[in-house]
Length: 521
Image (cartoon, rainbow, N blue to C red):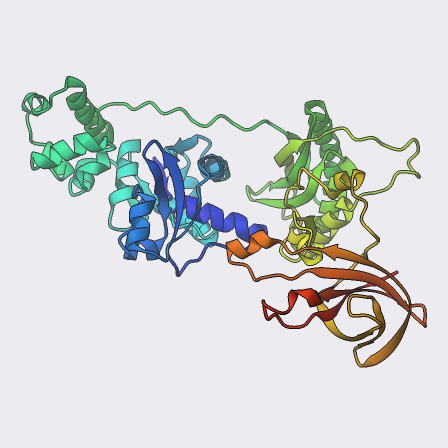
């Protein structure tokens, strides 16, 4: 039995999500904690290493924590997201065992009976699993023992990780561990410590009848004996494995091994058709697919592809994996192929055109092709963001990030915006402007050392500052007046004046400045 403990799962989950979304991760060198609410108020649910150096611990009241560390940074916790992420990790670990499940809010177990020899033994399996988790930036601790209780105790309280207890040596291995390793409730642990029983080994020689008399409740005494017996393997502990995910998989075996890539491509086309039929009947679309090919010598190879939107189109799957098929080493031939959807989402019906030629293709196929060729970290996608400041109205995220549930088209029903450039400059560029009146459009302007005379102007479109950003620590913004102008050569620009002349005076602000923000078609 293998147990994996994630002592910092909530913060590492948040860090991973923000990095994948292209956002700033939580600080690693400053005190940072997650905060949850209960009947007693706000408490710390997870803390990073600098917090522990300041003496902060999970379960501490937020008010007390801020008194100890005024520089503490916090965000609300998300236990539902943590639970879903832990289950996803458990399903990912199914490559090491078909029987596994989560344990509590920060652990998972794997029944490796009859599996460890495939990795060369239990130490090699633990090393492989620990290495993969470390490359994924998880600070996991692993323990292996004959029982679930023993593996959990080693993972959580052993001095080193990973650690393996040889078969039949559980009493000797668990004896020096603290009594908390038996998975007892805090009140029972406190009572045992008051009786001078601080190590598991101290329970071995005690008469059970005398131990029961020390507790006020028979159930409490029975829980200590039950947990001890389960950890040592003297009593069976029932543990239900995680139910398998929906089976969106197609398999194809061959009497004669395939020795050419053309044969593998033909097999992929057939498997993709079968898989898409299954997805369509379930009303689902795949977000990540994998092709697994087993060779006759017992080795195998897997090819994966991600999708920016749910799809159940066989031709699209084949197109994404076709170029990767040339990298497969056929060896002595492929005798089994499996094509599966590793991640699926609901596929909602869409209105289509009456003819294929009139149908407008979306960007998803192009995005998937670029990611398949260039890699998921190279391709990013624009996503809307709730802000009326032009440069803040969108952000870039991973191409495979889930599309938002809202879009900006609904606002046009009650407020029609003036035309704007299809592309903005990376940063508004300063221009020198001469205007006929202070608050009017420019009559002449200089941009990139070229003087231009304005012949047409339209505006202004006033955009007020987002005053609430100042309370979040953001920079103070100023009112903007945008103009659409055209010079004597017919070139059109989108410029704005930052600040108003009437703002000067008692506030002693700097004079208004002009910027060019984009070029109009």
